[in-house]
Length: 344
Image (cartoon, rainbow, N blue to C red):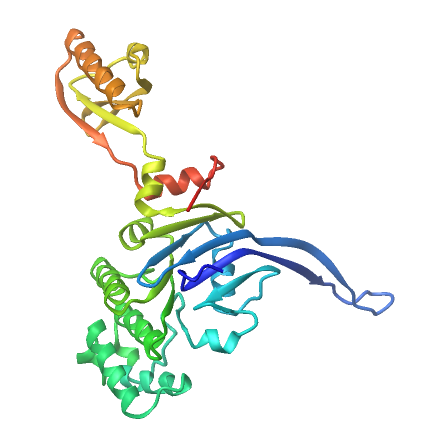
């Protein structure tokens, strides 16, 4: 157990044994169970989240990220390994750890729609043993922080989807837990609402010092929000690095040379430092896309040679663009069977 982590998942495995219930046998009248299959939802997963940090857990459908979140929140017990929240084992001290966790599930039914936001916070606050003046003060502070103070007496049924999602975050924070688990916090929201939710998550994490875990399918959300990224595929953690380091690890130096007409990419492959070459048509222009070696001196020499070859071919060079790697491209590479990039 690492004392620097507010949440630590240590060598966790989870195996589900699924069974299928047969219909009654026509002759004997008996019913029977049989084992259908064994599913390994988590395989030796390990990562940690510190106070004031946002950790993004990404993965395709069925990869095991929801199971991992459920093990952190105490809803599912690991088959092997351990999960710690604030230094306590979730399995052996479940009630104590639950008091330190706030959860926002995907969708907008976290709140009770006939009630107002203020009434929802009063109801859920009482369930979490937050009462009296402390409850009202904290509820008003959260509604003000999240931007719902002017809607505090409006029934939830009349709020927009984005406002309901904001209220769900308030409900998760009403007991002031140090850990916040957010499952797809921006799914189905318009651009403005999504931006607002992202800003509030950042504000809550940085100003209130929360430890936040976010699961999302939106790579832009993960890239903007998360300090560290864990990517799960087939129950395995295939990458766990700071977001910028993960992107840099897979970043090739790719340059696009925009030309007046198509160019045969074959001669460019003969230039030392050019790893691949292709020519595409993009918006009426021709783009010669070259992937270059990382070493700066060799790359510099290759760039001069490329420009010289283009000049000698008589083509007009309209512009040059260095293309940046994105988290989405990294995600696709990692979940498509490329070698893992695990690390600290």
